[in-house]
Image (cartoon, rainbow over all chains, first blue to last red; front, side):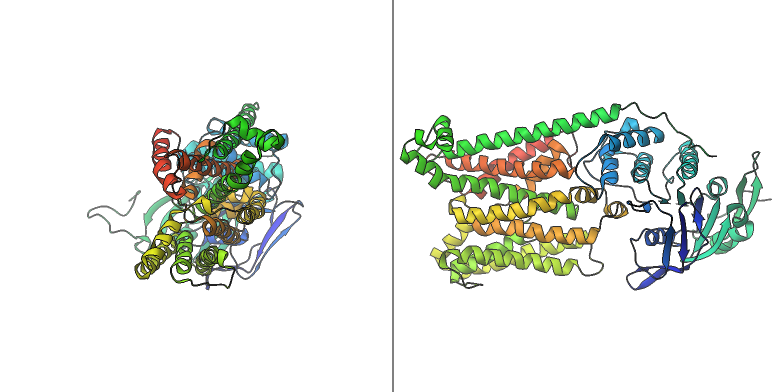
Length: 269
Length: 357
């Protein structure tokens, strides 16, 4: 079974260390790990470093990966592209990268299945540049999945999807992680998704790992206050899954001028 | 949960079939472009001060005994190097433009965007106006060698600047435009200082002309194309991935910076050699790739040969027109490609419902 562990990992942009000293326990195949944190906390930078796209100190230790393929695959946050490539071609070229020109039946069958599973067969021959944000994210997800990685890094993969698609995609990813024995790390802003879908959660702020552990142990009112500067409760839904309810934003967390006479709370009393 | 949840039912292979049909259609388009090129080449060989029928040209090509020695000499010795030069130069400039547009993610990019052509013109003008040889060479080769040296110098400058940290694709394009203006100003200065006879020679050179073609020049240009094309072909998936954005290409394992720099150097070579031999032909490198893209998309396995064929066809057809417009007169090819090709290109863009960029 594949495992991935980060050991004192840092990431450098130019000479500046944007992320530093990230050490985690080993995440095992089948696990979904949410990576949460405020904007510009270093989540994307950390993902790029894990994927080997940035340099920096420390090590990414992947053990038990299948030979002959890239163990780690990164799905970037920015999925916009202005090209005359169809969705089908974009997925094909993700799969064929680093291989010969020849496209076999196996490649095409795999692409068909992936598109079918993600429900994007109807846009297979649309140009990438003509897709909506949500469609682009699904196409990008298909590009990542056909590479059959052992470790998949997904940078805010559902930010442009409607609510039902978010639930479907994350449910599917959790199922796929279990079925393929793949570690899935997902950068998320929706903490309810972290609580619902992730086995473990890493909290990143100011380029450092603040906390890491079982999602229900990590996403707490104290953490929300410290990292997001909000007063919030965690309440269980009818299925026993934690839900974050934000009561108010503390003065430290406010970035915009508040309109006069507007209360600083959604549940004031 | 141990079983993946499916969002939708797996497909029945309809998409696979559609993709295979798409590939088949693209192969047919390539075949059509190839046949059109062969036809244009034959017409190019047939037209000139002495006009021959297509049948006679084909006989001269395939069964030389069946035509008179005079026809054979005109077709093979006089017209063939020029006609083939049009094909090879057209293919080279178009492929150079295609890869320039790919790596710079800019539809306006062509070998001329980065100042390669302007630099070559300046180098040639130095030789034509003042007899300056940048590298000691046989007198017949001073002009092309000067043009080549200056073109590669421009490419090297761009290369040096582009490996600096923090330099983006947009910066490279802007640097290229700065080089274009610099070399154009230097060219204007040379023209200002040149004698009226030298000035005429410089102006004629910058218009571009295939009549400068010879077998050795053709061999060198073909060799450059033959060396570079397989390299691009081997990197077809990686180059295609660049069109999805740098981050995405990098996430597929493409070494983006290295690929971009290596492609830039090869493109410079591919553009500099034809420019050195036939002068400035600016339209092909911009339009050839756009026509190929409209016809066939951006999968480099098809886009690369389509760009080469489209560029070759445009320049070969322009060569025909340069001789056919006024019998007995051969117009400079650069003028013909611009005057006839650009209106055609504009009509193609406006009539084409599909996005071309």
